[in-house]
Image (cartoon, rainbow, N blue to C red):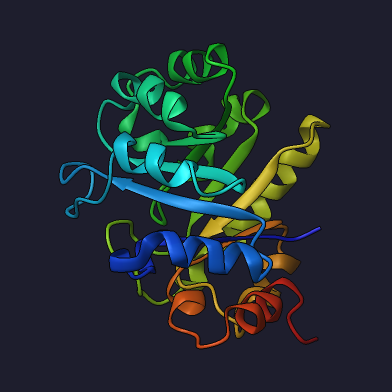
Length: 217
């Protein structure tokens, strides 16, 4: 089953609550929440306070993506704010195993992400310890970027490693997902698709979500 996680990075923040309710009603499975610190990536977005506020209006699964340095210093705050899953970047972690354990000890699901230029080998040894692997199909920092086709073999490679674990581990892809490339992403093994710009710039959220959840053959 393919899950769709609209990224609020592309939502209209002047009416964020309304936007979240709208995509939830339109069939979104998860809500993807991009957290940026201005250090690991150049942009700055939101913190735990905003997450805690929007948690009050929504029952949807909160998929919190930390694009920040020293994530171990902030995971507890995001769990308390309402994160159901926290994904950290392998490139930002000095001790990835320690951070995975810390998140799990907080009774939160954990994911690990890699950028387009990072080899899957970097996370090969810890895949069996996580609940989700996130492959970035754009360079993180800003919404609205175009999908990088070169990541397709990496998605397939990650899927093969996941299958070898024998565990139920989600494979998520984030960046430039639309109705033109969703089919290829799914065929290569992804089961969670993050779509920000494509969903939130579409007049019909329901139609947009359906077109990437069940792309035409």
